[in-house]
Structures are given as C-alpha cells and as structure tokens.
Image (cartoon, rainbow, N blue to C red; front, top):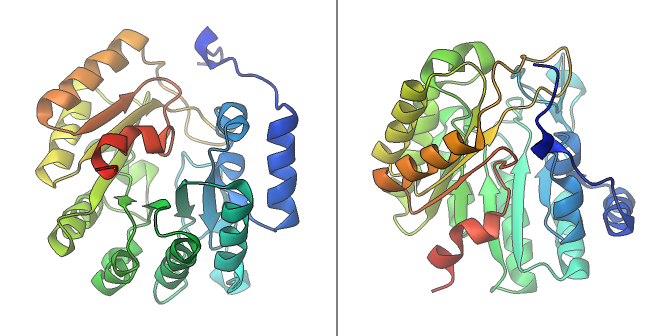
Length: 288
C-alpha cells in the first residue's frame, strides 16, 4: 500500500496558505490541519477553513493512526491560559463566521481541558454571537461534568470521533474505548437535544463493509446526526499501515447507506476528514 491513488495528489501550498501559516505562527496557535498532516491543507487554508487545536500540540494518548506528537510523560505538559484569547483574535482578523475547535487529549488535566474549550467558545461568541462554533472533543474519560462544561458554553455542533470499527478500536486506540465514545454522543443529546452531534470514521484500516455499516448503525442508535467517512492515510512508516484504498464507488455506497440509516448529513470520500467542509455538512441544520 505504498502507491497513492491519483485523487490524493494535492496542490503545493500557495501564498494564501503560507500567509495563514505565518499568522498562526505569530499568534503561537496550533491547527490539526498542520499537526495532523491533513492532505486538504492547501485547499482549506486558501479558503480560510481552519480547525484550531487547543491545549498544546502534544497528546497524552498513543493512538496508532494519529500524526500528532505524543508525550512519554504528562509531567512535562503545560496549559496556556491565554490561548482562547489569541484564537478569538485570529477569528476576528480572518473574519471567520464558522469556527472549528479540536484538541489533543489531556488526561493529565482534572477537567481534560473542558475549561479551555468553554472559554474559547465564549470568547468567540463575545466577538459576535452569530459566529457558529463546532467543537471536536475528546472523551474526557467519561466525566459528565466536563461534558456539561463544554455544552453550557453554547457550541452549535459537538463532534466526537468513533474513528474505527469495534474490532479494531482497542488496537488502534489503546487508551480509548468504543463503547465510551458511543456513550459520549448519546450523553450530549441527553443533556441538550438541540445540539447537533457528529462523528467520523476512517476507512481502509482493515474493516469489512459489514463492520463499517454496523458502526454506522451504532452511531445512529446513539443519536449521532452527522457522519464523515474518509480514507485513512498513515502519517509515517511508524504508524498503523494502510490496509486498503477504498474506491470512490464504495464511498458513495457508504454515503447512501448512511443517509438511509437516518443521518441528517453524510460526507463520504477519500479526502474527507473530521472537520472537512464542516460548515457545509451542517448548513441546513444550523442556519434556520
């Protein structure tokens, strides 16, 4: 699985992309677009589509598919209390109307970073309450109070990724739990029915079609509204290897199945990622 299909060929960074990277560097901000080595970075940055990554650039977990830096010890990690304010400044500078915020997992923090999530949302809303905010959250180790803290700040969309099928979850996400992830999505709806929920699954990790569809059904059973499906690409030779490149026709089939299961929106394609075309995926749901 060393040769990429032709549809993964991407444009080299242009001036707009490089200018955005420079801006983030000046404000000492991280994006999952850069840290996660997203193949869509030029296309998205060119159009001022960005996913801010809060709580630093180092994760306390060791998922085998993820390109974000890992920490061997939590003792060396810190928290940047000024980060939410700097993000709000950049949101204002860029004139963003839809903001996506994710984070590394910070199991070393008692609140898992929920407080920084909440403050970031609140500061963006102080700029303009009409700015829509989507957050892609970790599982907070199942702590309901942390989840409530984020929801009380008023995000429009809350995403939590299932990532892969049940059979592969333990190997790929050794510090996470498939059932807990489903529970997070279900609990969000229990706490606030109006919140739009979202999840994402990578394909090409060795899952079968039956397993993928079963995972989609699990997500719907736990009241997930939006689903994104994309091709897994190994960040390096040291990460979990790609087992299969899913065909465009198969991605279309999964999209049809997902809509048939009752998802309100399904983005499915090789280059689709968790936050890819985030605003477009839920436009009909939030602009009412």
